[in-house]
Length: 320
Image (cartoon, rainbow, N blue to C red; front, side, top):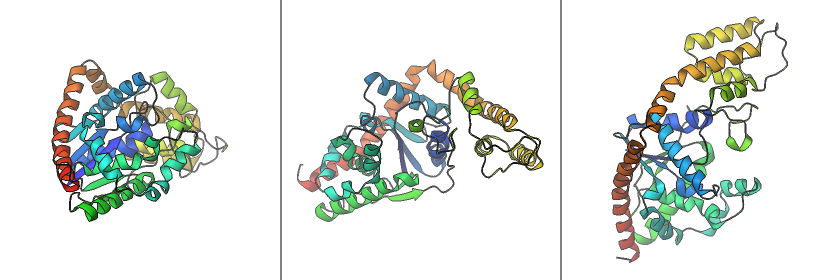
C-alpha cells in the first residue's frame, strides 16, 4: 500500500502541525510504502519572499528528520525537485471542469482571509491531484479540512481515465479520527494565521511566555476546575504520562490548584518531551550536507515513479 502526504513550508512548525500532520505522517512509515513531500510549489500561493521559502523548506526537512522520519523507510523529497508533476498538472487541467474548482471551499476561505486571488490559488486542487496521482497513491491521509481536495483528485482521475483509458489509480481518502485537534493559546484551533500557536522548536523563554498566556476561565483558585473545557489541560494531555495526566485531573477536581501551576507543569512536560528532538535538530543543523543528500535521494526515487506515470499519461493523450 502506497501512502502519500505533504506539508507546506509556510513558516516555523508548531504543536498543531506536529500532532495534526507530522506525528501521523511519521507513524505511517509502519503502515505501508510512505511518500512525504515538502509542498514548495503550493507554498508559492502565499509565500512571496524567496529567502523565506528556502528557509522554510529547509526548516521543514530538518524538523521532520529530527522528529523521527526515517529516510530509508519514507520517500522524502521537495515537490519542486520532481518537475514531472507540473506537466502532469497540465494534462489533468484539460479534463478538470471549472465548476469543480469553483466549488472548492479552500479557495473561498483564503480569499475571505484577504489572500489575493490568483490562478495558482484557484487551480491549487489540480496541482494537488497531480501530487497524488503521479505516484499512483493508494491512500491519502488528511484532516477533514483537506478531504474535499482528495475527493476532487478522485473526480479528476475518474474523468481522465474515462476519456483516455486506465492511467491513474483512484486513491482512497483516509480521515484520521485519532489525530488530536490542538487548541491554540486563545482556545481556537492552533494556527499561525491566528497567531495563537506554540512553536515546536521555539526559544525556551518565548515558549514559556506563550504558555503562560493561554486563555483560561475565571474559576477561583480554591474551586474545582473542569478538565474538559480547559485549554491548558488539553495540551498537557498531549505531553504528560498517563500517571501525570491523572494526577493533574485529580488536582483539578479537588480544587486549590491554580491555572498558573498547571501552565508551569505544561511547560515542563512539553520541554522535557521535546528534548530528544531538539538535540537531534541541533545535530542536523550542523550537517546540512546530510539533509540535502536525504532530499536528493528522495527526489530521485519519487521522480522515477512520477516519470513512469507521466509517460503513460502522455501516450494516453497522444503526446508520445
